[in-house]
Length: 598
Image (cartoon, rainbow, N blue to C red):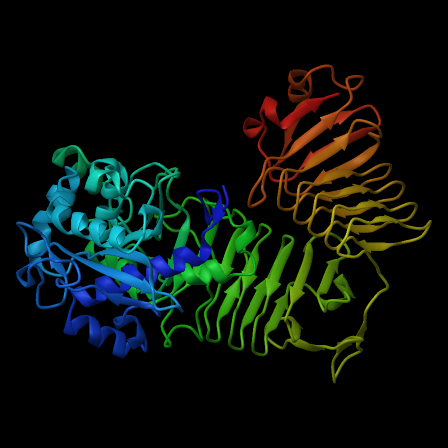
């Protein structure tokens, strides 16, 4: 499922807004300490309601002034530490268009007993009186439950999950169709149709109680040993890369919510960053999945200039080596890929990127951005597309294909790097020979049929559902976005499906096939000669790939599976006159659903 898909719509903007509401409520609950934190981190605007929103008062809600504490929160009916803010959004016409409910998280020692009622699901009972009043206020202004956003951070996120689960029993079911967004919540209501949960996997508070809302003992047991589990309503592989996480010793102790330093640091630093807005605003947001590996920079100004942000091996992570999204900040970042095919974005600032193997995509963003490539410039051919995208194609396949937009410089070597400036006509350098761009053929934004020549062709389909044939020669075919059909034909070809549900047929010769993002089909049903290598079989950031064989070659999927042999890190299937190599794949990971016989 797409990362920001909620109730059948793209909710990326809603997630950003809900986090701002949740953060505002949490920072306000800290009082002067929260205000000081925003001042020190340069985020003082977060101490006020988001644009267009304002707090509702006791008078607005026809409640007693005694129901409001000194920080402007409605407090719990029996616990003064339990806090919630009710906010209204005023549109351009001056009318109230939406209602916001922001549950505050832990802010004082009085909240600790609230965690026990959270584990039993009773915490929500503290707020029944104000939720009923808010429902009456909303109805009086012509609003329905669909016009309400419910959110909260930490303990407040827990309250959001409980309210989502029990919405039909609150205020006569008024909130049953409300929009629920929980952030860094310890407990999870595992219903993705009802609520979205966001947090960092290295935040050991997040998901610490699991789905335990019925038993204190069960909840405490869950919290003792953190389990990096996936839920249907949460993103589970997001890393908040702060100064603590940059240390190889992180999490500095057991993976438990009771590990205060190692487990809570990102829980605090996340309040002063915009990780979820960064994800929502990314150029790659549309291809991020709910459980994609996403690494977001939260480094301090001290470490940012000297620390590479990357997907590193940590006790709190289970996705090291998988394709990942590496996201920077509005400042100058150092971003590094892994061995898989990764997606890196710098945003503003003069960013530096370091790329190794895999088919990587880089979006530099504003500023003067530099990409350091492995190997030497002689290992690559350079291609510049009409939209300004720079493609560096590793001729041996060792370093993969690199696609870069908004990048101004590239480098080779580390000690004494060779630097090139990206221009419209070439890669320009002062001390060495310039690198001229090679010829290419491009499609359009529509559906194209593109055919190569008897020689070497480099064909890019761009957008649309394209059909691309290489013809003779050793060709490079790139589908771009859309559901494309790529045919290598004769020669030793390289086929890149890129983004979309693509069908790749190598044809004759020894071909290299990369499906990219989506549900891709590697077709060996018609021509099955040569030695073809699939670089990313079921290793993309989303989708499920399929091998397609003719019944004349293998009668059943079982027959095909039984002929695979393990050759080092690769799974190899051979037949008379041909073979296919699934790079970095274990036979034990292959299943009937991976093979289709026609």
